[in-house]
Image (tube, rainbow, N blue to C red; front, side, top):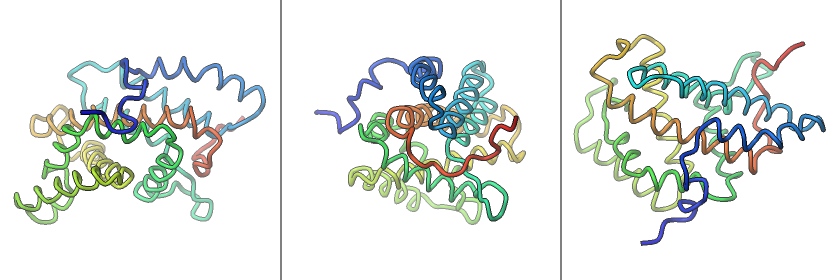
Length: 231
């Protein structure tokens, strides 16, 4: 059976690391910098790569810290400044805008390829009731979990990749919040499976996002940059 569009892109041929992405980006980054072009995107990409590289240096037992650093890398890409409120736009809104822009910029359908290649792992996250914030409002029965997985599969089959990604990131963000806000022990045994799954997906998704921004989105408007460098 042939792979869906984007799933056979050369991006997936060999293991991609932050170091590889940095090497691919460096010549164009330097050329854009010399011409004074795309400064905010260059800053976003640089910040994200530094945090991804930090996460790569973590050992196998440092999943919690690794996931947090991976999320910071993604946050460097999606975060945007609200000039009226003088603070960053709330995560939910900023992420939604970012995903829509990412899909619009993804000329090679690499995002779709990522979802199809990681389909089994994506569905495992959707099937995990403990990473669904609704579970903590009221118990979620098996039927509702099955429905969430069915919805995700249906949306993926319909090509509604932005919606699948948004729902997936909401669950990963929940795990991130659980860690950052002290909702679990460091290295706690109860959420190891969820943290591992989310880390694997978040790592690859962030590198897909970086690739899309480097290749096609460098001239796009990703919103006002939060806390730009000041001389």
